[in-house]
Image (cartoon, rainbow, N blue to C red; front, side):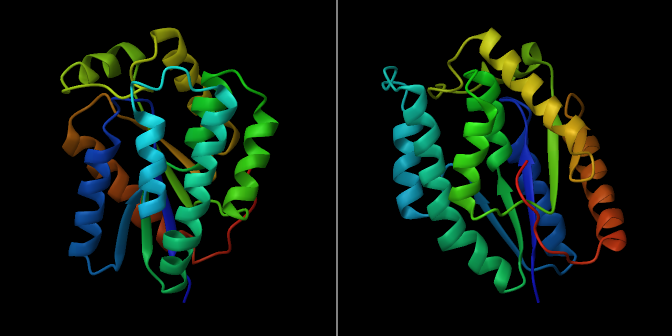
Length: 217
């Protein structure tokens, strides 16, 4: 049996982590075998790379370095965590995946999209999520939510123009791939967002039996 790969994406402050936790809890209550993971991270090696990427002290990090470090973390994560779990028939729920690199490094850093896509195609061996929940929120609202946290990481500290490009990148991904990406209005209560995600997943799963992964882009 082959599992399902579900990812959550969105601009900073959209509430992804909260929704991942709620969604995984609901699926477990319904009897599904679930593995929750995140990016960057998900393995000991990937977590070490995460610390480098998000450390606010590393303001000198070159754009190319950022792209390659995210891809390196992802390559280890896919091979060590994601693919083995899918082969065991689990539903793998991941907080961020390749769409994040396209939005943050491609659109946010204004790097060539085809370069970011190709690097990540190699890093993931072409693995693509079965379903992606893109939690969308206006940048101004996301910044307000971030302001309630203790300490922002290197990416979160970037300016509003950068984060606007990131959000626009996510919206373009959703526009181009509506069969995979479900756009969710995240500027609502936690319960409202959660209920929409669960309802969509159950409807989508009933209409889409397990299928093989496609190609990125």
